[in-house]
Length: 401
Image (cartoon, rainbow, N blue to C red; front, side, top):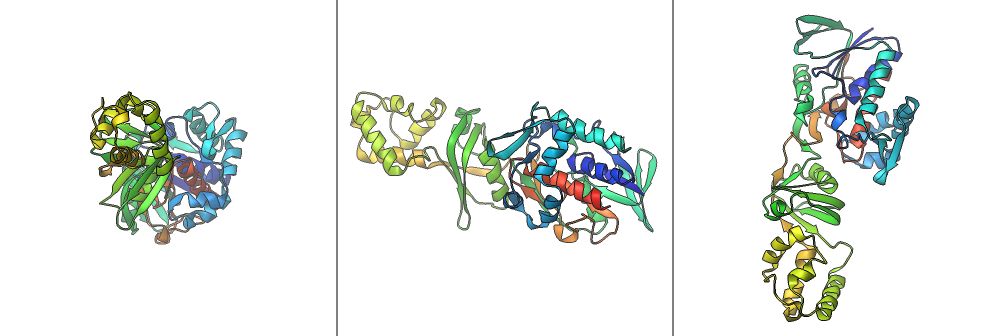
């Protein structure tokens, strides 16, 4: 049987491996000059290939349509991913949060292992492919590209979403899905930066905050994440911001604030200030704030509390001290919206999972047509979960063809 796969990301490559193992003739059509282009930027180039957790914990980290993935994650789990790469000469390491990386921290090792396995079973990968049309006549798909017609019995769409379009993710799969009668759930950037208006994002650009809590809320929404974040000019970024972005991408009106001292209660923090101010009454507020805040944030903080930088802390009144505590525990940011697809790690939305068989990933609308990976309306938090979704959906599709 002839199998055509559009896209050579992790889902397409894994699908090709499993289908080719069964003796099928497999063709991968890739628009880029090399396979797995998006893999190279995963985990900032180190490739966070999976998350070493249980199936239930994994599903809990899927933001949209987690239940749809139970079958495929059970068929090819994170432990299966670890075994696959280690048995193919890629030793792995597990870091904080059960994030799994190649020991070399080179994403190219992951891509090479997948491509080598494809070639081992005879998969042919064509690069610089520009598809001009796809038709289905009787039970055969005719894929026209670069002046050539490829005839296949089954067609797998593994084109990715809209995130990082420089890697080739430009929404091609959505057009194919629509052509064959599928519903596309509205797409938005996910695992992306959040834009803010505040001056501190410019003053403190490049600054990483550790052990803080980021809160987002409105009249019907209230969520927070603890960990690490960073400032950029006009935006915030980092692990807890990426996770938050996947939850707030439906919210048009939103308030943000940072708890800069999440390890201390208001009362504990106030008691610390009372002690420090009484022990060092002749020190300026700026000098004392340097014990509590990165220097890049102090100018903006002083404006917020409306106290001069050279004000002696021994003269600070209770009301002023309470204001300092308030801003340390609730440092407001003016939310201006999501970042764009250019730096979004994944795409929220896509082909409706209601129209896809969760075991085989075959279309319920058009027989012998399959959708895998990010093109589907499935997305998860950062930490290797999205890469595993790609590998598991690719495996299940290829194995069941």
